[in-house]
Length: 198
Length: 198
Ligand SMILES: [Zn+2]
Ligand SMILES: [Zn+2]
Image 1 (cartoon, rainbow over the protein chains, first blue to last red):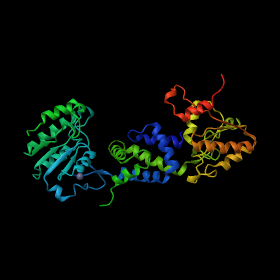
Image 2 (image 1 turned 60 degrees about the vertical axis):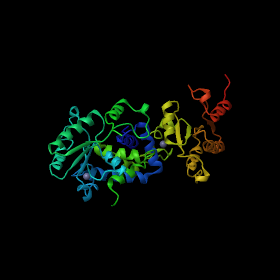
Image 3 (image 1 turned 180 degrees about the horizontal axis):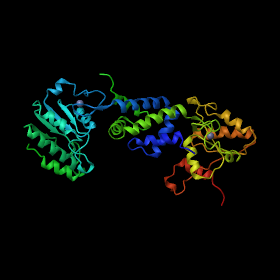
Image 4 (image 1 turned 45 degrees about the horizontal axis):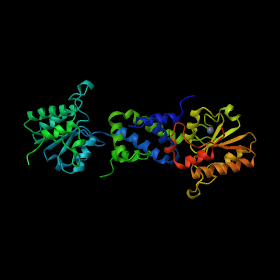
C-alpha cells in the first residue's frame, strides 16, 4: 500500500515547531472535519509567504517589501541609533515597550563558528557600511545574554568603536516582579555587576 | 498600512487546533528561517488533502479512495461484525489493539439534537441499509461513555434489534493499571454495573 494522503499530511504538519505525530493527527482530523476552508487559506498563504517574504535590505528582518515598515520610516532613520538584535521576534518585543525610536539590525542568529555562522552570515558587512555612513551616533546591543550572544555583542562593539560610535548593552538582571530566589545565578551575577548607584 | 503577508500567515496558522497568536508567530519565523521547503510541501499537501480526501462510501471514515483500506478488505467484510465509533481516531485506537477483525462504521459525531445533529447527519440510513443486508451478525457499540455517546448507542441498538442482530456495548471501567481513587465516579459506576462473575 502506498502512503495515503492522510499520512502525507500528518507527516507534512510536523515541519511545524513542537508538532509531533499525535498533535499532527489531531490537526488533520480537525481540518478535514471542521475547517477545510481554513486549510485552503493556510495552504495559499503559506505558498505566497515562502515565495514573497524575504529580508529587509536595511535591517534584515522578514518582509515582503524591499524595506520593512520600520526602515521606511524617515523619523526612525534620522534618529541615529541602531538597536542590534538576534531575531525578528526580538524587534516585536522591543517595539512593545514603545521606548525605542531608532532602527533595528536583525542578525538572524549569533556568531557560532562551530556551526559555520561567522560575521558574513550575520550580515555584519551590511551593518558596517551603515556604521561608516557617519549618520549613526549610538549602537545598542540587545543580543541575548548567552555565551554566543555576548560574544556577538563584543564583536559588534569593537566594530562600532572603529567608527567612534557610542556603544551600549541593554541591562540584564532580575526581572521586575521576579523573586531573587527563583532567578538563575547567571542572571543574578549580571544583576550585581550591572548595579547602579541610587 | 494593509495587512502584511507575515500577519496573514500568523492569522491563517490559527486555524490549527490549540495554536494561538504566540505559537503561530513562532511557527512563522521558524518556517521562514529554517524550513521553507517544508512549508511549501505542507502548502501543497494541504491543498490536495482538502480537495481529494472525502468519506469512505461504506464506513464514512476519511479516505481519498471510494472505500478506505479497511473496507476493501474482503476478510473483514465477510466477518459479519460492525463496530460503531464516533470518530476516525477511534478506529486507529481500536486497530492498535489488533483484537477486532470486522469492519467499522464511523458516525463522525454523536446524536446532538440541540446542535442539529440527528440520525441523518450521522449517516444512520447508510448503516441501516448495511444491517438490512442479512450479512451482519453483530454490532459492537464503541461510542464514547458520555450522555450523547450513550444516547447514540441506545438509538443504534434499537435499530439493530429490528433486524434481529446481536448488539453489544464495549465495557467501561477502571483502566488497567489505574488506581480506584483516581477514577471519576461515572467510570466507577460503569465499572460496578458492568461487573462480571469470576
Ligand atoms: Zn528593516
Ligand atoms: Zn471504510
